[in-house]
Image 1 (cartoon, rainbow, N blue to C red):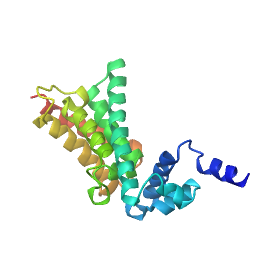
Image 2: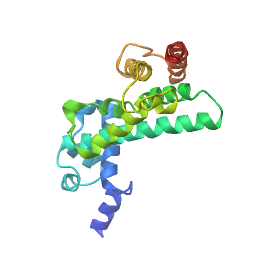
Image 3: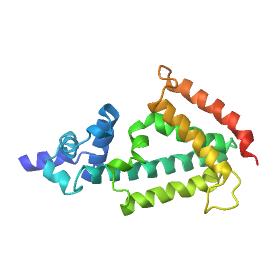
Image 4: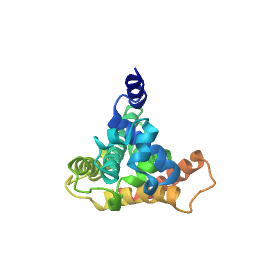
Length: 203
């Protein structure tokens, strides 16, 4: 009976591997990625450390899986924004750009983890596949919102678009920009920046 109660508590998310990644998000959002430990995540998920180690060999493996999830979530977030914009006959580039920045504001730990190379196994196959997926969207006309003659390479316009949204997102979550402002105000700043950038993307 005691074993069953503990197991139910530990697997309350339905999948321990995913529950541990949820714990990474919670801990990293409060204290930073450097403060995350496998034992701490196991405690937060309500399981013994030995259970956590069956899924992830060490902290670096755990953070690698978290980074892969972040990359996949951002890819899905961008594509969903583009699809909504097309259905609503709205500006797809603006929608995707705002989705990128909103992802960083809503999930700063995920955003920081994506290219946290000093803390991950950057040659991990799952991580590499997630980076490939995101890169494919970014160099594929910025999720098909910009003209694209070569989906195997970044065009100047795609690089400008990515640099603009990633740069502003980074300034929002780790820099000096709009620290005291609400999310809505930051999103309006982002919309204004995208409007300013758009004329440079036409050619």
